[in-house]
Image 1 (cartoon, helix red, strand yellow):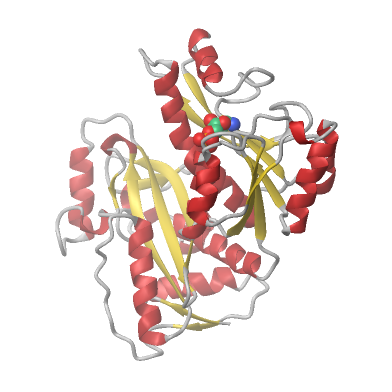
Image 2 (spheres, protein in one colour; image 1 turned 30 degrees about the horizontal axis):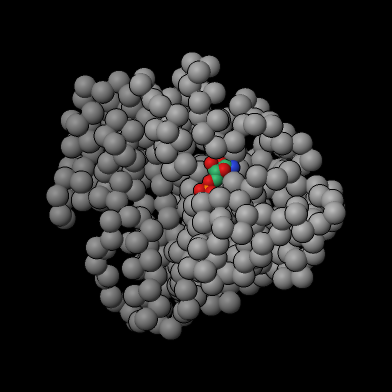
Amino acid sequence: MKLLLATNNGHKIEEFQRILADFPIEIEFLTPRDLGISIDPEETGTTLYANAEIKAIEFFRASGVPTVADDTGLEVEALGNAPGVFSARYAGEHCSPRANRKKLLAEMDNSDDRRARFKTVICYFDGDRSYFVSGKCEGEIIREEHGTLGFGYDSIFRPENNEKTFAELLSEEKNAISHRGNAVRNFGHLLLAMQKPIMKIGFLASGTGSNVEAIIEAISNGRLYAKPMMIISNNSDAKVREKAEKYGIPFKHISSKMFASDDERDQAIADEFANCGVNMVCLAGYMKQVGEPILKRFGNNVLNIHPALLPKFGGAGMYGINVHKAVIEAGETESGVTIHLANSKYDSGKILAQKKVQVLPGDLPETLQKRVLCIEHTLYAETLQKIVLGDITL
Ligand code: GRF
């Protein structure tokens, strides 16, 4: 395949080429210089995703070649994740990297919380649509500059589990752990995934369907490489039905009342999914236990989301607001979200991903539920994408 790297930065080009050489994909790399293209798209986006996409699309338009572009930002916890998308012009338009570092150190002078991360987002535009992968590197901002290698904020950023700053590491050492190195490796995995059968998702949901919607949105905005195939609900009036209509996804109502046994019901569900090519079943607010016919057909490819940090606050009766009530009554200081394999016992399958949410003083079950749900809406799709990229194996 031909691939245009939307940069003339020799180091970046070399890094892309070296990392992607480890993947069994034939790539002919092109650069804007090779094609005589000298555009410099304005990065007007407010997110790394938007800026990476602006560059990928503009360079595709100028070249007609599938294009990959990236954008990088530094997020500092104590500054509410600033400078982020504005990292390159933190101290003003056309300012020097030195001025940016000076401003950052000054802003953080009184802060003991030094946690920070570099994030790179890569956009691949194939001429038809955009696909995204990202990479990050956690670390901390030190109090004075160390090292002369690298660029940008490297001399004040010390990656986690490391004694040296990015500016004290050789480029091979840095690339092995860096945000961009990780993002490029994820891009290699994305290209590999694109050569295999795509993840086809069948949803089981009983209620609102906000998680179903979040996954469908992640697919349509290119953050999850998958296809939504069908939504099945045991509840004919469930709001999730409206989501099916909104996104034009087939909806089926299959409930226990229609069958002599739960096994027959689950056989019908498994058949419906199998008939439309589903290879991944996502439970999202599904109020029934999944039984053998589904588990036999889809094996480990049946996932569930739970609004707490399993194994705590799971099991029969632990659903909806009950979970958050129990968390608050137990005096927990943190709760969160769990994505796990579904099996024949509620909330007990292997845990694939978890994200914490603080329980705040004065939290009511409803306020906690709202914050947890926000995290649910990103964690499910992120976990599915990690499965697609081979980062999580089932
Ligand atoms: C979510 O809290 C999910 O964790 C749980 O059920 C709820 C479903 O919400 N399993 P929604 O229908 O996706 O809005």
